Amino acid sequence: MKIIVIGATGTLGRAVSTALSVRHEVIPASRRGPIAVDLDDPSSIDALFAAVPDVDAVVCCAASGPLLDLAAATDAEFAAGLSGKLLGQVALARRALHHLRDNGSITLTGGTFAAPLAGGSLGALVNAGLSGFVTNAAAELPRELRLNLVAPGWLRETLVSLGMDPADGTPAADVARHYLACVEGTENGLTIS
Image 1 (cartoon, helix red, strand yellow):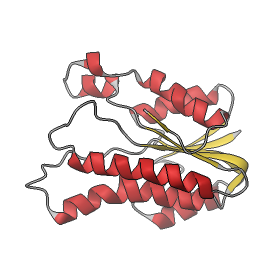
Image 2 (cartoon, rainbow, N blue to C red):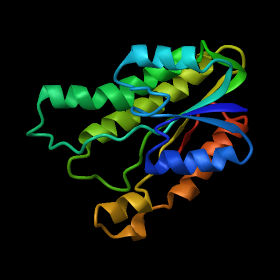
Image 3 (tube, rainbow, N blue to C red):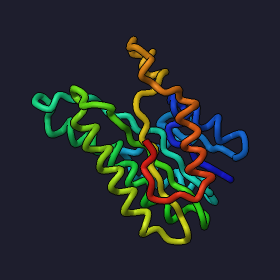
């Protein structure tokens, strides 16, 4: 299969690209690089699909968002947080369904909080929105296309980079196996935590 991986330069994107490239042709895309895409700019998503035609799957790993203090965050900060991770991935999925081959797959990235997290209200909103979107939009897809969401908790590598205890994190390579299963499987409309 020919698969676009968006966010391929990040920790999770690299792990997903590595897992997929064992059996598939992976086209890496990121904000900066030979194949550029910015989920905050829908025209760049259109340009991506124009530059990379005849795709079997698209995987979005470019989905990080800020922790914002609920009381101190401005409306603009909340709107910016909704723009890329939620609305950007929705725009990606809406555009992908016009460009994927029959039986193609779209896999988005959400998140999971084990417990309420200070500054996590925006993330919780985005994650719930993505899960609801995937559940409902999957039933509307034409041509046997599939749409799923992988919602990992903390990546071990991220916790290490933040100087936090990595014990509660999952290695990116372990999370990547869920993306592989979404691309190669038959599931549709699932949120995989």
